[in-house]
Structures are given as structure tokens and as C-alpha cells.
Image (cartoon, rainbow, N blue to C red):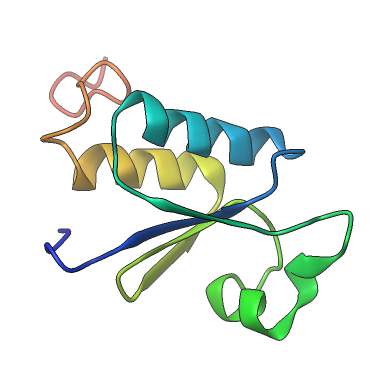
Length: 98
């Protein structure tokens, strides 16, 4: 679970549809976050610093405190569950899986 001093950082590129989905999800649900742009056309995803966040060198990725996560669907599910007090259940229902 998220602690009050954890800072959610989103890494992505606006040219990447999966990145835009994460950015939009956080904005629609008023999830406090910081965006760090990673230019895919500039090959910034291969930098040493970004590979510490995601060794696979793909966007989007997040850092939540000291926890790193990549892959857009996994990030969305994580955000729904870790911020369940902010996110409506209809995004990824946890109670009724069907």
C-alpha cells in the first residue's frame, strides 16, 4: 500500500498510446503524480537512469516510492488497487470479477 511520503512518478512519452492511457487515468481519477517525459524518438528509454526504472527499456513505467512497475495494464490494475479510496470500482472491479 501507498504511504503518505511515497511519490508516484509516471515515465512515458505522449506519442505512446499506453503512456497516454496511464496519464489520462491519473488525471481522470485525481491521482497525485509527477510526469517525467521519456522521448522514445530520442531513444531516451535506453539511458542508464531510465533502465534503473525499467530494465526492459519500454514506456510507460512508474515509480511509487521505491517500487518500480512497467506494462500499462499492470500499472492500471496496480493504481486501482493501491488507490482504491480514489478510484471508482468500475475501472477494474475488485469485488465482482465478472
